[in-house]
Image 1 (tube, helix red, strand yellow):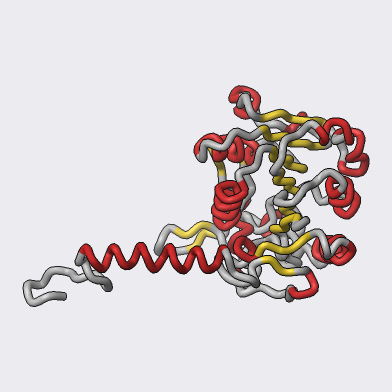
Image 2 (cartoon, rainbow, N blue to C red):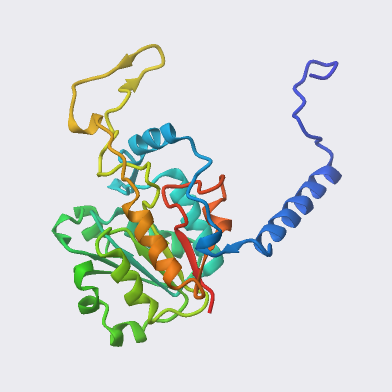
Length: 284
């Protein structure tokens, strides 16, 4: 506090200092974006995270409670920030989402791209589109197409002819967790330098199923905790290494083509999200 008793923030209010703060922040950002170690081969990556294991349980609770425009979106705060940043920098002309669920994330993607003034067509595929939320059906964004398809027969929905007509850059989001290696290899044949894969839920400590952790810890009113009744949502089972192992196998096989973009994966700490090594750029 000053002698007058007024609060003094932990930084100067002088305009010159604010100006320098902006300069320093841009300098540091530019250094990260141009760093020689930004893009890393999978052989250079470590299977670890700066995020404490127990924090994944807390994230799981909030993730499955989160709504966007009244629709389940099933994403953590870090996910939404990282996707927003990825779209800002990559400026995709095509986004492909595998694993629609009820459609909340597809709506968020289309809205975010419009907010960023990025002309882009979004294709969201699921094996069962009957679960689309009614609000999603009512919204009908003009830049969003839902496709019925099966990741185990990905070539039937995303044919070579269809893919050849889609403008680049691409962001391909694998969130269906079926035939991951086959799916990634299928899109590999059509991807170009600057395109991205985002492979979700490769953190082996994340929840193995939708809704896990929603009831954990009850609801706090600030003075006490109400645990409610027991249910399957109170249980927390870890995903395990299957997703991570499959992703690493693909990246090792095609290590000359793809690098992990550490600007995104490590934005909040090493492997900061549920998607270890999961933001992947085509390098050539």
